[in-house]
Image (cartoon, rainbow, N blue to C red; front, side, top):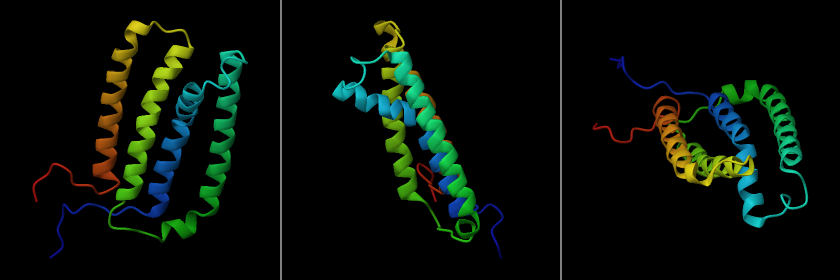
Length: 147
């Protein structure tokens, strides 16, 4: 007898789409983390001009990646795995750098330093909630549930 409440197994296309668009959404903050650590471009250029260049590069990568995903759609739709643990860990690592990047973006845009901790905690809660929901629904991860 087939269980009614068994988790749905998603194709590699859906998982790659989630991972790709999540990465593209956080590309700007991730690049900001590395430029802040190495302090490369921010002293030589205006921050607004630098952010404009980063946003246009992120949009260009998103368009190219979307075209690539659409080209490979048929092949990726036929590939499935029982769970996608490695892809989920990749999302967690990208999210950690994205949270740090949001704080750097707040600093670059002239935010008050007293509120950095508040922004860090709120973004951490938001990202943790979204990742937990994504992990349960799409990546078939049963963390914290009894079997």
